[in-house]
Image (cartoon, rainbow, N blue to C red; front, side):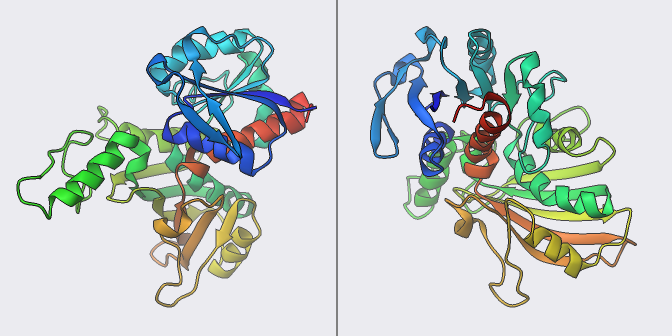
Length: 340
């Protein structure tokens, strides 16, 4: 006996990936419903070898459905998630709306699976920010061994994190650079993204941090340990898919780079590719379509007593969003619902 699963926002980048990953991982489903806004009503989306026609999110009855994967943004989630939850359908939400709610668990299954049992307070589970998700998968096993005191992270985030319009803008600006008179002005971003990098993701806060940077700090504390100090600089780069991060870690106990490499190699969700030679590391282009978070450039930071540096790369539409949501659904089914 399988589950009845709803994918809300099925025509977007993340929603389509959710459907792909449900099929790829052979999630035990009896029925799948693909929901979208009325303007996308009837659009066809793929689920394995099947084609689904989208249904109207506004009129959909969630009664009798087990799990709803939400990829519709905070405003729409605020309206529809409580409706689904009240109908008895467990919501796994990819937006930022519920991440900081103390009554809603924020889960990365490799890091804090036991938090799944907190879902019952609101019948909602939150999926973390894309940049946080891949980082904490790498941090957790090192924290268990040597207790992390402080993290300094710089991100190199692809435009797919901003949606289809941003991907189109990068493509059109790039083409326009080579065709006189066809230059494309910035719209999705405050400055040109083609052949450029932008040190702003989301809005600025009073502290001078952007909200994306604040998210990484707050979510890491909620998922792993509230005592960890985190500082982040988040940068948008002209890459279509795949986020990269340069992570500097300070631990309470000394952790040798070779031991760290072995710990990461044995940890779930990670693949270590770390050869000290040209090309002996993973780049965003190479991680696209993969389930794993890749770790490279592991080395001692000799400027502090107990320091490590590493390079972390992942497909942001997968581990940063859709894959993590499906993994939460798998965890929920395995530990709580127990139907599949």
